[in-house]
Picture 1 (cartoon, helix red, strand yellow):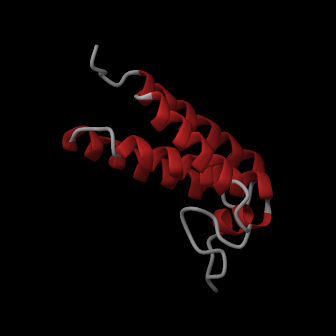
Picture 2 (tube, rainbow, N blue to C red; picture 1 turned 90 degrees about the horizontal axis):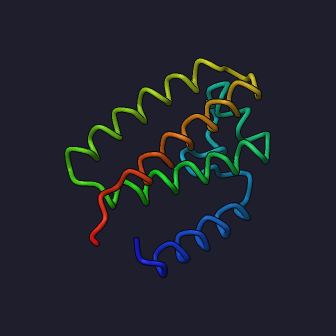
Length: 116
């Protein structure tokens, strides 16, 4: 990935982490009916920041993948979301789920084919 794109991506991640806690990256914290995991994320700044980072990384990586690989990554994201939802309001479980997903996304990025 070109250095300017990496720098731009990191700047975007940094600015998103300063976003208002009332809106996580992947859902609206103002929605009346929040699932237990979403409420925990909205109520915890570190989890909110983890959500912003994960969704931004997922979106950036999605743009770099071929269509088939993008579909597989979306399927993996759906499976991961079910796992996060199973945590309910357990902050430690949610944090571990984000850590695991970021590890997977970082590995996917590291394994991208790049032109020489």
